[in-house]
Length: 302
Image (cartoon, helix red, strand yellow):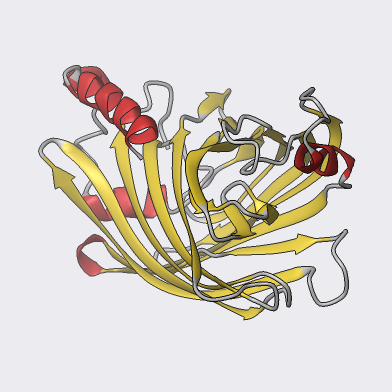
């Protein structure tokens, strides 16, 4: 994972040299920052690194399989006047998984695949953008569009289609809880222009893509900047056959805000287990680790 991780970390190290501009507001306590970063619409900038380890099973799986996914997500919202916030949350993916059959379902951040051989390459890129209203207490919401770009370096690890659709966020928070969800839906509308000489790419170009991802958030704030949390992804492949459309996981995890030198960092760990999953190829459990490095938003005041 060096190619995708070392670049952003090098940028992070450079930014840390400009402490007066980049570091988060030191007047805020770790508890305050912990509550702000839980809201994906808040005007807080952070660089997020996530690692997922997913066990794969199902009727088409012979033996033990797994997929390891790295995600880099810079979150840099910009206020628009006194009320609204523009958000763009690109997700750059790096997938290490089986490729005999390739990625057969899911999204770039939650891929599903099976095969005896494996490959580790950059995957497709997700980009939700939109406008929302963020509040520390009460309701926050956002609306916009979401895109998937076929950026995968490996022909077996990407969708080979450009995809687009709507996105929406809704959250409610008080001093102790944050509850909400982030909905994204995509339709494929154009192929990536690669040659159909490869049967796998031809099949990917001809596939009807129509799928939904709903990430729900349930976070309980605890003393000393700790959290109990759950943030798994519900996915629906509307074109799949009966018994293979829905993945519905439950999750339990913890988070802790602390300072790494002068920089606030949120560390999270979570286990996700599907109570409903596809018959053919399915996740059988995901262990997630995430680190969010908080940097100062020069435009924000939330």
